[in-house]
Amino acid sequence: MAAESRVDVTGKPAAAPPTPADEPDGWRRLRPATPWAIGAIAVLAVIALQTQLYSGQVRTVSTVLMFIALAQSWNILGGFTGYASFGQVAFFGLGGYSTAVLMAKAGLSYWMALPLSAVIAAAFAAVIGLPLLRLRGHYFAIATLGVAEGLREIVINVPRLTGGGAGISIPVVGKHASTAYLGNDTFYIVFLVVAAATTVLVGVLSRSRLGYGLRAIRQDEAAAAAAGIDTTRAKVTALVLSAFCTGLVGSVYAFQQVTIYPERLFDVQITLLMVMMVVIGGSGTVLGPIIGATALQALSEYLRANFTEVHTFILGAIIIAAVIILPQGAVFFIRDAWRTRRLPLLDNVRTYRL
Amino acid sequence: MNTPTTPALQIRNLSRRFGGLAALSDLSFTLAPGQILGVIGPNGAGKSTFINLVTGHLRPSTGQVLVHGADLTGKRPWRVAAAGVARTFQIVKPFRGMTARENVAISAMYGPTPRRSKRAALAVADEALERTGFTAAHTATPNELSVADARRLELAKALALRPRLLLLDEVMAGLRGKEIDRCLELVHRLREEGMTIVVVEHLMKAILSVSDQVLVLHQGRLLILGEPHAVLSDDRVIEAYLGQRYVQRKAR
Image 1: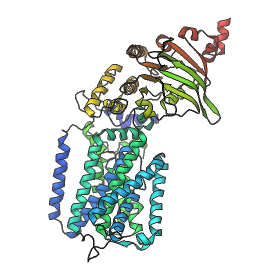
Image 2: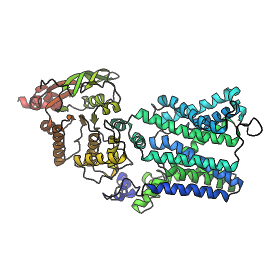
Image 3: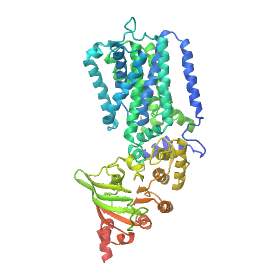
Image 4: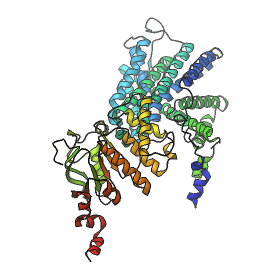
């Protein structure tokens, strides 16, 4: 009885739209060039926006752009491949600390340290990838979490190199400075470039052979392997790409902060934000992480400004509500609403009697 | 039968244990190219284990698997696929969240003759779907498919690999009379094109009409291997597969 009415109420089988044979794959009915054009316009709009902001706001939007880049990075492994990394901040911290150490101790210029830091994060991912990616689901999540926590402890315990718990400062003024501080306006552009680059990478990936391989792995690893996909190589590639991007963002963040601390650079909250942004926006999509990062970061800022005392509480409540109403993420919700011409807002609540 | 050509499939003393349970023990046989081998046996006889051992989804405890002379023992599934071996899964494993033709195109993108362009892969996919008699739109997603079309999708994914050796794990389960006939027709046509096929089935009728050789597994062991009618009239097979009571009734 209960089972029957469940099927009836959700109406999902009946609501499945007829797919005409001439419709191109999936729901992307746009011409291939259209997303690139929209992306280019968006980038120009963000550049134009900068002229309208005062300095505090420039910093806020920079943070949004940073989280777009981080969410896209997480999306490569967690979204496409279905391996939810809860230690993604390890690559962020490694990228940041590599930059700080390379600039403060080795005297490298920032433009040398930036790519090197990303490569270091990627190389670290390649090393831990083989053992870690043998694990699945919760085990993978816990193992990655352990890696991030472990890395933070290592950074704290080699103070000669990293400054330990007291942090490390990148020399940005005077004759010790290998590269002069960039300033808020330049960091805004750098974060924009990184966000755009990671988005382009994910966009190219999603239409590529590797992208299809990763999505197949997410759905069923045994079937993916039977289809000829070298699942080990594909997964490690995804992790390395993801770590490279995350390390890049960590590097920019470290230089922007000038002084960095292990607690901040390996903060598990940064990982959680990446996960939530991707999940709420739509995992395994190009647009999802942008929507998720922008929405969550904007909401968080608004709440902090207007409900200082209880802002994390309200934010938490809204996230819970978002996950209940949009369990598959905003992008898929909008797509389904578009295809079926109805708003399935409460379907999930009805289905599971929440 | 005694042609000097290399066998399509050579199984030598193949065994697989799960802890104390011997899922497959000491299986040996050879299969000539272009033959259809039917594999039957009651539940738990080791049929799926056998397929998983050939395709690399399981590693054998002991023994060897040779396909067209190449030793594939313990090789990972993608290496086996690259060697021209394709399979279907007993429980269909579609890639959700993408269309049927994208599902099949993945096999064409990877596999022995990889199509690196998406357009070429989709063309192979459409052709493979056509061959299986897939009735839904090629752009339908797996959730929208009937049981029969889900089976055909599973088959098309294997065909898009353009295999030389095809292993079908109960691909006709859940199909109705006419659908089974069409599937058997396809198996025949594939064989005429030179494919070697292993058909694991519960359906006795399907096995009888399609196989050159029938192999009966019982409790992980090879009970008998031979011509379909000889095998099916063998008393040991009747006892193992159809039950003791059937034997007694026949004796009376």
